[in-house]
Image (cartoon, rainbow, N blue to C red; front, side, top):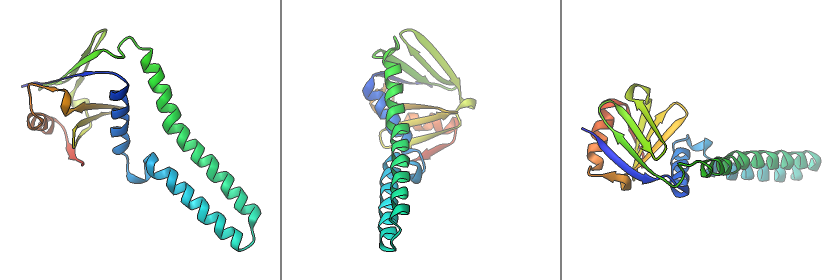
Length: 170
């Protein structure tokens, strides 16, 4: 049994993959939580230090918070943008990718390349509301349900859960 996906590897797929990858991080490591948390912590600290009259320490705290926020935003957005710019230069970008899940593993074919990952190399999989994310080391493979060709998400779940640990997230 094999399950085939066909999708265009473009900017929207990249951004969706990145968003799904961030969604798998623990809550406190997600950029959407860290930046507001740093802002709130700095504001509370600064206000508390102003009340007791330690404005110079409060200003240092604000400066530290600004550096922390800038660093986190840089890691998230600048690195993501740099990755996207790099991918746009690739001859594969914008081309159709065919990915097949089979009893032996994950096989992906693009116009100018081909790759294969055995199930033993896939550490885990997570079923999300609109697809499945496979984790293989630092590599995350996002397979969206809209790219399924001739199969159902139930068949996808059956083959993946028989080969690796499958978690559920909403």
